[in-house]
Length: 129
Image 1: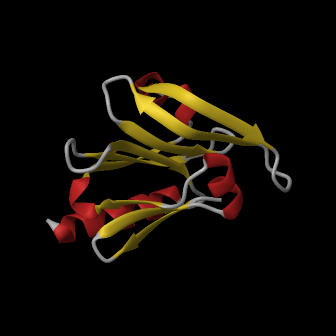
Image 2: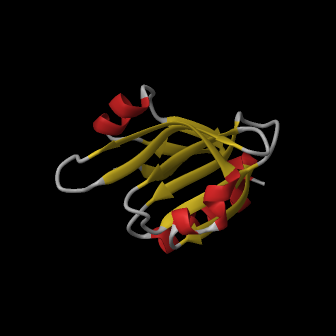
C-alpha cells in the first residue's frame, strides 16, 4: 500500500512494488514548500474530490485479499496532474499543491492513520516555510 513520507524537505509518495508496476512509474516526490493545504477525506469517491479529476488511465486488481482502485494517471479538470491511490473508497489524505512549483496539483492517498499522517505533513510543511 502506498505511503506518504516526509524526508528532509520533500513529501514522497512511496509506492509498493505492485503499485509501481501498475502505474508504470516509481515513487513521486514534491517539495514541502509546494504544500498549500492538507486535509482528511472520509470517502473520496463520494466527495467533491472526484469531481475535480479527469481520469486518464485507471486499473483495478485484487492484490492479496484487498480489492483495489488505483488511478495511475489522473488530471485535474482545472489543469495539472494528480497522484491518486485510493483503496475501497477508504479514508485518504488529500494534499493540495501550489501551481508552478511541481507538475502535480493534488495528491490523494488512502492511509490507515489519515489524521496522524495529515498532521505530520502539515507540521513539516510549516517548518519549511
